[in-house]
Amino acid sequence: MRLVTSQRLTDDAAVIGLSGDLDLATAPELRTALHEALTERAKIVVDMSDLRFLDSTGLGVLVRVHKKAKAAGGVVAFTSVPGNVVKILEVTCLDRVFPVYDTVDEALADDTGPEPGTDQSAD
Figure 1 (tube, rainbow, N blue to C red):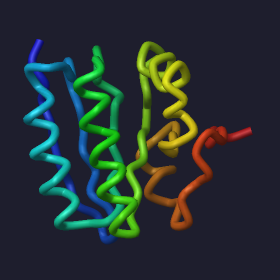
Figure 2 (spheres, rainbow, N blue to C red):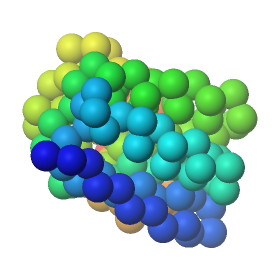
Figure 3 (cartoon, rainbow, N blue to C red):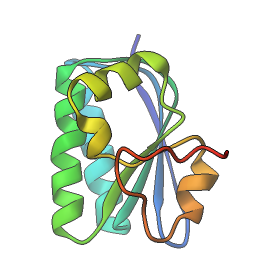
Figure 4 (cartoon, one colour):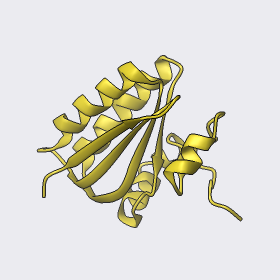
């Protein structure tokens, strides 16, 4: 399945929605979308609610954009992360690098950005 991306801008963030598979064939599309978003906003929220698959190439794109955002004083946060992707983030220890939220609204509401690896769900 191909990757479909959507983008919307808020006052202080770019929200990128992912639908489908993020792999070797589709990673360049995401790279382009994220780099364009970074020129608009320093905070990027990646909504993974409809992401079905993530491979190492896709993960590499996310890490590189994280580094670029961090160098510019920004952040890349994930929302609605599917279980299979949560496992990948945990195994690679990237759950300690990327802030993860349950919803886009939670990510947008957090002005400070969470400490990576902390649970952002409601108690």
